[in-house]
Every structure is written in C-alpha cells, then in structure tokens.
Image 1 (cartoon, rainbow, N blue to C red):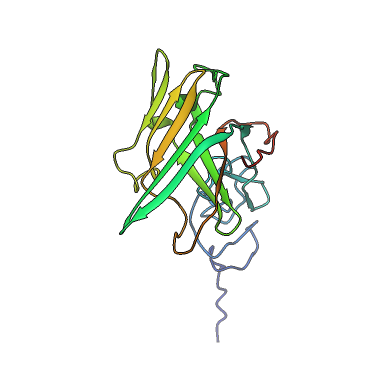
Image 2 (cartoon, helix red, strand yellow):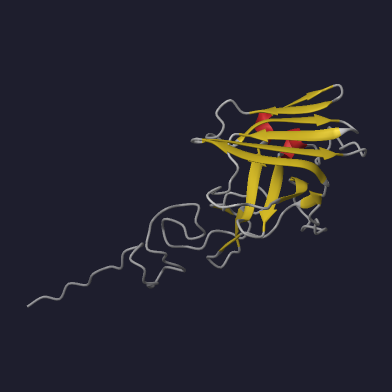
Length: 204
C-alpha cells in the first residue's frame, strides 16, 4: 500500500498552504494573481465602465471602484433625447464662461471626460469621452468617435468652445425609451486622480 499526497491547485477556490488568496481562476489583473498570491495595493483591476471609478486593488484581494474624479459641474441648457425606429440620438448643450484649463491634467484631451445624465424613472447614465478621441485647437477642443454608438463611447462628437459652450451628440441615449422619460443633464466631469469628487451637481 502506498500513500499519494496531492498538491493543492491554484484556482480551485480554496486557500491552501503557500497561497494568500484563491478566486476560482488563474487570471491576472483581478487582485489575486495566477499563482494565488495577492496583487499589490494600487494594481489595476477591471473597471465598471465609468472613467471616474477605475478598478484598483486594495492589497487584500478586493477590487475597489472608488471615485477618482473631480467634477466640473456645468448646468445644461438643452437636453434632447429622441428615437426613430431603431436609431437614437442625444443632444446635450451647456454654457460655460469659465475656460477649462487646456494643457493641464484637467484637460479632457489629456485624461478624458464623462457626461452624466440622471432620470428619476430611468436611473443614471454615464457616457465616457476617452482622451484618445480629443484634438485641441486654438479656441477649444473637439471629440470625434466614428464608431458610435459602439466602440469606445456612444458619443459621436463633442465640441468644447473655450469660455462659451460645450455640445455633445451621442448615437445612443443610454435609456430604454420605451416609456415617457424625464431626464436631467447635470454634469460634465473631467477625469482627475486624485482626489475624490468634491462637488455634487444639481439638476437644472
């Protein structure tokens, strides 16, 4: 008779000798490494689709989605949401006499931006405008996304006119549009990290 000792396997969901975590897989980038050791605090892990809440490991095996943005609240002066057959369109316009700090870490062409919408009946919608889509000109900046409503963002185009206005056109509204909808356009958020969000935008 012989006795065979079976060595524990990483990824079986059981924390065994030599392991500091075991999350049922051997994938990297989820706060528990392929060898079942904790990934360092501050390591990237999957986000939740919002530029303001990127995934960051806490060093104890948990992926956190803490707010990493400072809001630039802008009162919307126009919000138009429409559907024609299978096609959708969203138009959001805001006036802003305060120039955004182009060429600084608050520049959307450096770190991206987010348009946030809120409906009491339809929940909230967050539309990312990634930095890669921005170009900067003498009087402002422009965002283009030829792949909308797919690709990196449902936003088709955004125009930032320094000290004047911001206009965003999207090929998807983010709302179901199968019932009457009331919505507010309440913020334009520039992605910054750190500190945490410092203001709470109010509906217009």
